[in-house]
Image 1 (cartoon, helix red, strand yellow):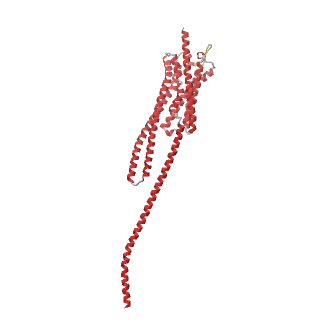
Image 2: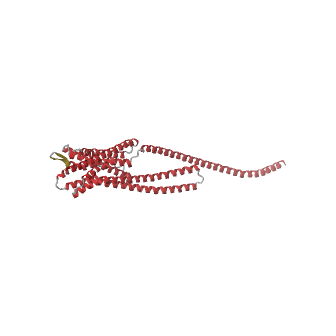
Image 3: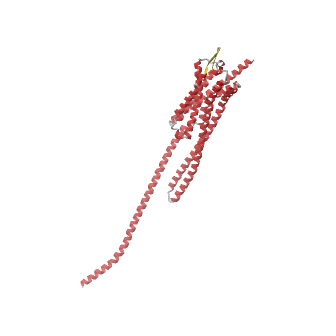
Length: 420
């Protein structure tokens, strides 16, 4: 009766693990396929975003390696009788290395993405100096370095006709090696990446919040200064034309509208980052924390937990690699982005043409004002010369009229003297 109960429970546990691992395998593979399709579509319309596309491509490769080595081989292993190892000792060591390497690389590429976004937002001047290939290369290299001990820890253990791929410290009487190994794996796979992710996205959230407040203060001061400047111009120039006033008001409205758009953009980015932090933290706590906490609890206390709970927790430990593509699709991907990019380019060209048209109108208005000024100056000069000439004529003519009669009288008197 006891053997039948044990066989039924082990069969139920194996069935549960198979269902869970198969679900995670297909869910993650579907998510990576959709992200890859978006990546091809996005790079076709935007060739300048090489940085983020490189990180996403590395994340897809790392997640696919998790589905192959950690999930796929584990599914095949579950179909074996009593989870025996049908291959050689070298294959056991290589498979254990790649299982750890795939899980670590997936976690570290996500951390590299968070570090890259943190550098680009918090210190944008340093973003160009740090190449994304260095970040991805460091993630892959660190994952390979930390997975190397598995080659020496795991080996093929033969017990009669049974063949198992297990760690060497399972045959030891003390549990010191088991505790050291589980503490090391829990730190490098779960706890340290979790802390770095929370730190990076918290810094991003704080920076976006500061920029939003700065833009709001700048927007209010800029709008008030623009209004005061426009009122002063109208008071100082009461004879300005209505078209000039309309163009000035239109330019001021455009500046205020752009400032308000910046504030709204920072607010949207801040809220999206906050939601993404909450989702990432919740998923990492729900799926990753139970397995590592249970393993550490078992290693340090010696109390054995339920096999079903440990099986479910172990299957859920690789769930973040299957859920990461869907989180990325939920918060980062915009399928209308190529259309939005075309619309933004069209709007940019329209705004540029409008700006050029406004500049031409301003130049024409300045030329007209200059022409009016020159005409006024010429008219004033002509009026000044004509008034001077008229005054001179008015002054000379009376003198001539007064002097000529005297001359005529003097001449007539001389003629009379000569005749006499």
